[in-house]
Amino acid sequence: MVKEYFKPTDVEEALGLLSAPGALALAGGTWALAFEGRDKPERVVDLGAALPRSIERRGEATRIGAYATFQEIIESAAAPAVVKAAAASMANRNTRNRATIGGNLGANKSCASLVPVLLALGASVESKARGKPSATMPLADWLSRPEGLVLTVIVPADAGVRAASLRASRTACDIATATAACAYRLEGGKLSGLRVAVGGFGPHAELRPDIAALFEGEALPPKADIEKAVGPLLAALADQRGSAEYKRLRGAALVADALYSAQELS
Ligand SMILES: Cc1cc2nc3c(=O)[nH]c(=O)nc-3n(C[C@H](O)[C@H](O)[C@H](O)COP(=O)(O)OP(=O)(O)OC[C@H]3O[C@@H](n4cnc5c(N)ncnc54)[C@H](O)[C@@H]3O)c2cc1C
Image 1 (cartoon, rainbow, N blue to C red):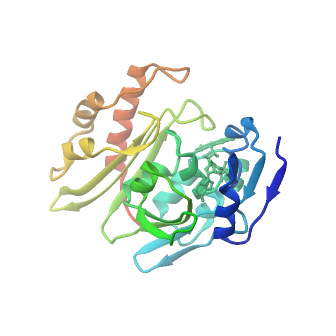
Image 2: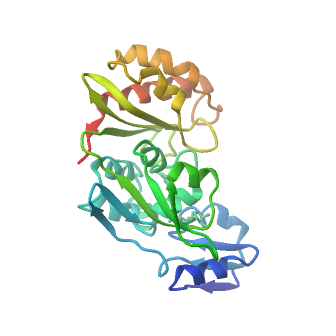
């Protein structure tokens, strides 16, 4: 049962309160209270007044405060269209009104809506751990060793980069069966700087340099060839959402669709 509730106005204060054993950092609560919350932490530290939530364009990058909700990202003039599309793939409006980008990274589920596109775009995060200065690092590094709180997500929007983010699910509101995102440039008709991220094929969504290496420096092959090459690299667990084979085939088709549907960032 929750016995203590805090709403600090400062990140260092929040980190101090979170240092107590069993304390829970609470953002929108759509993961923490619905799922992890079943364990009912005794101390809850509400991040709402301690974290930034503004979304702003600075030069060639968009800075998204960790407390920005999915709906705020969709409605922002500053967020890249491909990130908005990934946020909109969370079909439930009630959840989008509460769920934050920081919480999506903190939960880091395999089916996370924003993680694949942020990884594909080469996003970085500004984070803060207790007693340490804030640090900026690639998102992939923070996700592999999460420490402290994410303050801001920095999304590069380099001219000429094309990107896409797609998800497959049984129904719009269901958890994704597979997600795929990509980003690349076309140079002389060939893919350059290709990054591919997939979700649904392991405990977390992740960058897949092995998939990117198949197509880097090449002209985009026909979709059927992409699916044939990517399929053997994907392995999923069978569950109520589909067999391992179905998910493998669906994931490969999603990667092909993402490569073909990538649009220049706007
Ligand atoms: C009905 C329903 C539908 C859903 N659909 C989707 C979906 O389509 N796609 C999807 O991705 N998810 C979905 N989810 C899961 C959830 O909504 C997302 O993971 C959401 O982004 C979590 O954000 P939050 O702000 O609610 O985080 P919380 O639930 O408050 O926290 C999640 C975790 O992140 C940690 N955390 C929070 N903020 C930070 C931070 N700034 N730095 C570090 N750690 C932090 C918390 O301590 C906790 O461990 C759904 C959930 C529900 C209940």
